[in-house]
Amino acid sequence: METIVKLSITLLLLLLTLLTKGVCSCGLNNITVGTIRSGVEIKGKPEWNVVVVNNCDCPMQKMVLSCNDFQTTEPVDPTLFKPLGNNECSVNNGNVIPAKNTVNFSYAWDPPFFLRPTFVTTSC
Image (cartoon, rainbow, N blue to C red; front, side, top):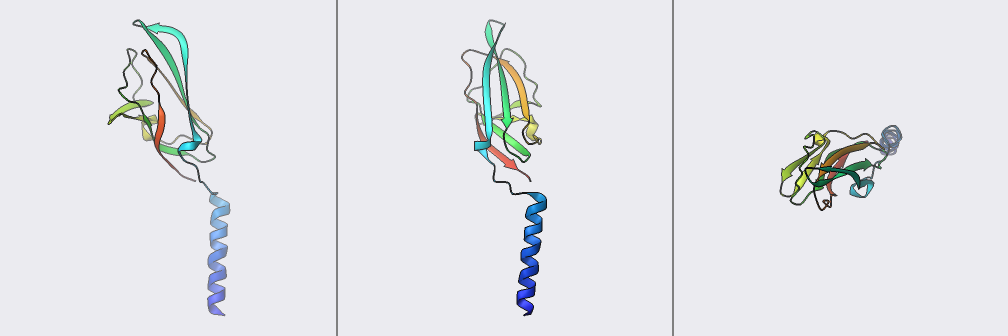
């Protein structure tokens, strides 16, 4: 009888934890990276506006994008997008990107870079 009571209490606590915190199973598939030409040229290179979207219902952090051989003639705010080496770049300085929010930055180069998510952690 005591075992059943302990098991019931454990299951109830687990259920309450899931209800109050939510269940988060988001990952790389919940990140969208959009790149569009702005129509401006910087030092003879087209400018590209990038929008990184957290499509998850939970905050994401430590986001990393592939950015093979990234270059730009226009300075990019390193707190928004910063090369880390190994052809990877940090988004939002690794800080939390709230659920359903975006990080925006621009760079100038030709051709545009293919930026895709390679790492992220979620917290619900």
